[in-house]
Amino acid sequence: MHTRWWISLLIITRILKHSLSLAKFSLVICRSLFQILHRLVPTHFKMFWMDYLKNAWTWITECQIGLMPTILCFIFNADIRDKIMPGVTHWQSPGYFAYFPSNSSIAGFLGEMLSAGVNVVGFSWITSPAATELETIVMDWLGKALKLPDAFLSTGHGGGVIQGTASEAVLVVLLAARDKILRKVGEDAIRKLVVYISDQTHASLQKACKIGGIFPQNIRILETDSSTEYALSPESLTKTISQDIALGLIPFFLCATIGTTSSTAVDPLLALGKIAKSNGLWFHVDAAYAGSACICPEFRPYLDGVEEADSFNMNAHKLFLTNFDCSALWVKERNALIQSLSTKAEYLENKAYQENMVVDYKDWQIPLGRRFRSLKLWMVFRLYGLENLQVYIRNRIELARKFEDLVKNDARFEVLSNKYILRFAVGAPLTEERHIFAAWEMLQEKAYALLKRM
Picture 1 (cartoon, helix red, strand yellow):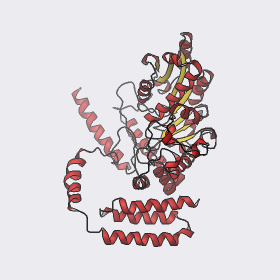
Picture 2 (cartoon, rainbow, N blue to C red):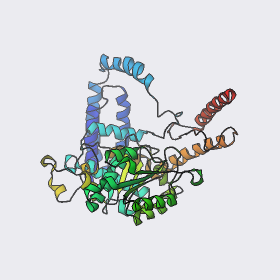
Picture 3 (cartoon, rainbow, N blue to C red):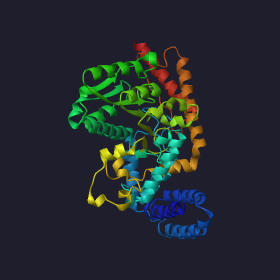
Picture 4 (tube, one colour):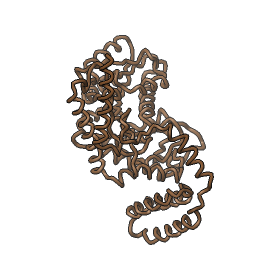
């Protein structure tokens, strides 16, 4: 328990000495960090803590204030302000509604800054025990917030790991599923392996198949339509699997989605999971887009059936106030990942891992090196708490519903049709009702101009 607070002290040391100390902005950040970490540190550390910070603050104020080099002013004013910022698409703008919510927060920013300050390369437990152990802890926190089955938690045979993106997450589980089936049927059978997705599944799955050596003609892209709200049909899946088995092919991987990118469709997990289990398929659930909302009890039913899944992924950097990149992946069998992705090298060996006392996350991902991403997710949980995160998500969803009402009340638009579709993603922390109305007025003007030309 005490180790965690010593880690905080070491982190703030590096931050004070190596991060933003040349900019006047650093004074505001440092004061904020003092206030925040003062709340987090136990009473019996506070005497040491305050004496230490007093010395650190003296070092900053006496040595750094007013000494910001001219070159740094030039870089900020002439380069960043005049050359870089004009070409930046402002994803954090309250009027940004494209693609998906990719929101940041003060907590996420502070966690990112702490990570940059300590700058560990935590590919194994021994390279930075805190980086590994904190990741295990926060992934269990998030898994419990989503009410995932216990099999996905670190206390069982599974566990969670933070990937960079959902594209990385689906790749590693596809490789694990591929190697698992090939150990059973032989490596030469790779040309017979078949993957099942819908026409709404994210394109990253097809890229993963390319990397994993799955033949393009063996990717089954099943059509969806408005009758199922663009969800994958269990009947269509069953029929296609039966046809492939009759052809001597080997079905091995199914991906379902909670909130597709194109249409926010939600696939029926329970029915699809049962089909996958009866046919021996690895069942992956991609909840990258909408998974965050499922920490709210009223939206958790969208995950009903996740107990049938072998792996589950959601992006904390979408709607969960965690700065990009932070993609949470859970698996029921961590050994499936390790067997597929583990590498043996003398310089990577350590006694704790060899005796199965710790986790080395390098064996759960594609690259060797890894950032201390868990710090920002931890900071989001610690500063906001689950209830405040639920309130935030409900507020974003309510704003989206207001936009939906505006669309429904205009005869020129439909909420969803088989014609032209406009995606409107609400999620930025600064977005208010007035931004929704402003966006709608602009869309009405464009629609009026378009209809006049037709």
